[in-house]
Image 1 (tube, rainbow, N blue to C red):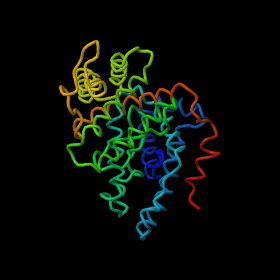
Image 2: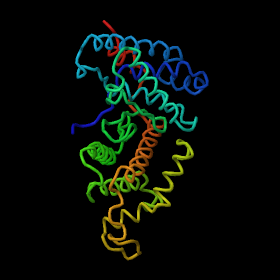
Image 3: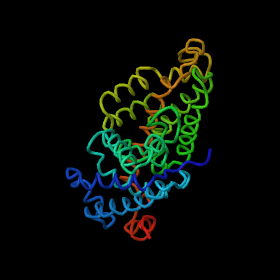
Image 4: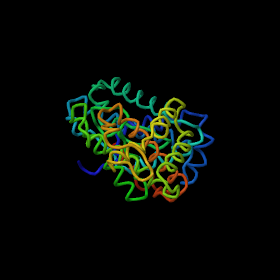
Length: 314
């Protein structure tokens, strides 16, 4: 599988910026964020219009019979800017509803433009996801509408970024295997997921403490039922004990389960999903923190000098 990058359709950005322009409750948080790069709230409206025009021209071509492999996917820099702006809304709590409503609008727009929403709506270009107020893209698969996903920009630690991308690629190809999955195919997600959690919080001193810290942070960004499911899997479900059993085979000096006590704890999507959902949340919320607090490549000329030329309709 080729290197993954967040390349979405102009339709996604047109509807995303329209939602932000019309959400007056969000303007108090968005205005100072935009001012950091010399933009204002009126820019949201004009930019939504620009992306909308770009999409309308492209939709007309598709409606006239252009091949679906010509569908435009904008450079990841567009996703970076959009995600950088979205991080201003981290104080609003969960982004799940916003993400779901955006996806619904995309499907409705595809349908109203006379295109096959059932076919196009599952393509990567039209499947954004917003996790912890970080924009991402769902990697096409036959398993889940929201997973696996990559963020608008990789996490800055290159080792974590590469390990997470490997997990995403692995999950995306699990669709090729019939359930129940063979032992190593499923349990590899468990091993990589726990390893990523530990790497995200090395200062915690142990995987268990790292997971507790990440879960505490995620409580700010996910609905209560989702948080409960994550806690039940990652903490109360003893995900570390299961990981240790499939890695070490026999109990360690500190105890734990042996391999046959656990067998194959990840042989279908239902058992793997909480691992993937959790690590996706943890990685995305860390990317959001980096975008909000650290230099990110977003600057005052990113729109006028770079991105708007991709959106112009000639």
